[in-house]
Image 1: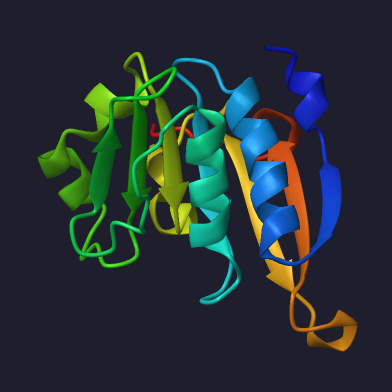
Image 2: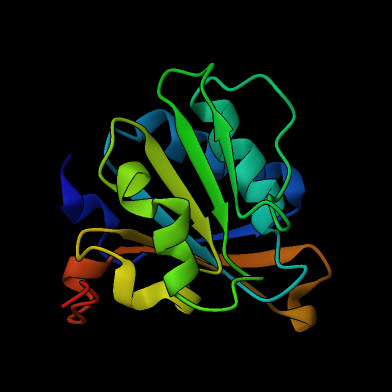
Length: 159
């Protein structure tokens, strides 16, 4: 994949449909072994984004945030999707218990919500997606920034 495409792309959306369409496009571009890190405050639209992303991969089953299960697997798309929500992790060590490396370095695509909580586990080439609200621009306004961690100047690999 040409990582240059993800060097600071900023898109503004004005509703869940537009957010979903951007995520759908990104899901269509996704390749095996990629990790997408999805961050934003509560209510920012991470679940809407995840649903659109999954649809872009060809997942046709309901997609919800796996808050209490930590990971949800979808095998029926173009590529397997491993959807993580690490918000409720008690410690980074719990990711080891889940066997995260099998997912991160497997044949599917990972989408990790609240990835900032496990920064030290993320590989350098993970793609960051930051969703921000701005009430001054409207209830449904979202600013979505995509960038590759390798271009951010921050090495987040586990040492």
